[in-house]
Image (tube, rainbow, N blue to C red; front, top):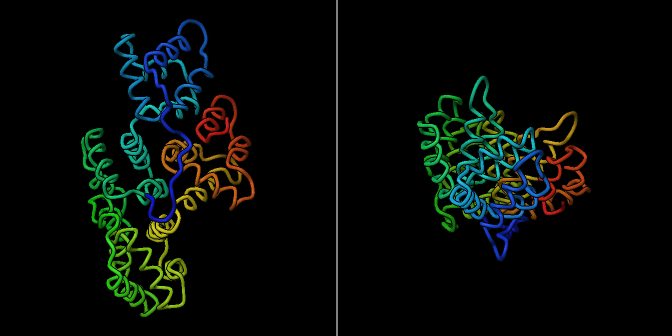
Length: 321
């Protein structure tokens, strides 16, 4: 996802990695009376996901125990949620989050959008395969049963991998696509939603960047202004998320984090999901963007909304324990 910025993670693989030492240190932290939460944070929040998988395999091989089972029995609350999220490979974690967003009464459309909008085709393919393996049903089918109308059609296009590969660019086509968007919205009475979701779900992000520039040249308005004037509801939320991810993904995530912590109560699920899932991609960029947008650091915002080991684990992932 580096078409517009250079992604900078906050969590990177540790050098001189010793999975055996880590596995034994984790066992010691959980053995006997009481739990050494600090040791668990110091190890698991400072290793890459790949290294955590090796630690789990070493834990089983050398100690004959399942690391995830031990963590579940020793930890609790939101702290447990963070640590267990770190232990799942990214496609499995995002699959679990998608399932959670659709399980039970009601659907968390915003979580679905946040998870799917920034993904490349290859990342979507991994999630789709993982979802079916974990839940025994295709992701597209589950999404179709929980959503409707143009929003459902857009999500279906995203999960079937309709988007052109990264780097696919055709400037002449971009001019044509900008005109199609204009004719489907501002240029007519009513809105042809299909044109919007087809172009925004099919074109590569590199291509969309050019389309949006062409749209502004053609109509004098930004694509965001056009979407706001022409669309509403979940379709608007999803398409505007795609637009934000094309232009600056860290801006999109910084906004989501701010909203999760703004006002009464905290949306812990969103807070954990973004910090965990972006920590090895672009959480440093998101931190920088957050500070620029809201004139306070992400760490200070997280500290004021969380407490205890939960707070310490998130701050360790953000890179400012």
